[in-house]
Length: 129
Image 1 (cartoon, rainbow, N blue to C red):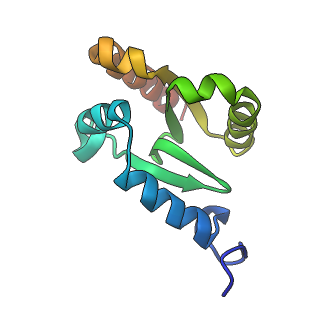
Image 2: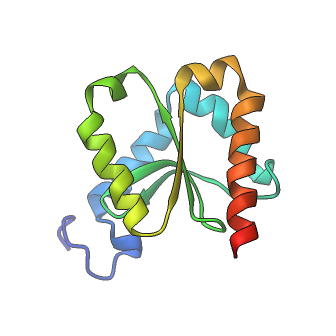
């Protein structure tokens, strides 16, 4: 099977995207590692988050399937790729995912506030179900 085919792939991903997600997991940024340490193992409201999770042709930094929540941590590179980030956001929203974004600085400077915001958004989504 060539890695570009999407038929019968989970979430419409390709083998290439799944391999890229694995590389991203091994090479998370410092801010992503910091946030992941607080999200993994159901530490936040017993929600199960996945890191560097493929969703279609994009990779979400963190994803919670229970509430269809994508959490993105944006470093300086995102200042130069606004068009790409907009396409990612549109793709995620088209499929019903809620997106919440934080900067690296927010994660480092005030992790409790970041976690409170993620918790708030997840709680609001659950209340709508």
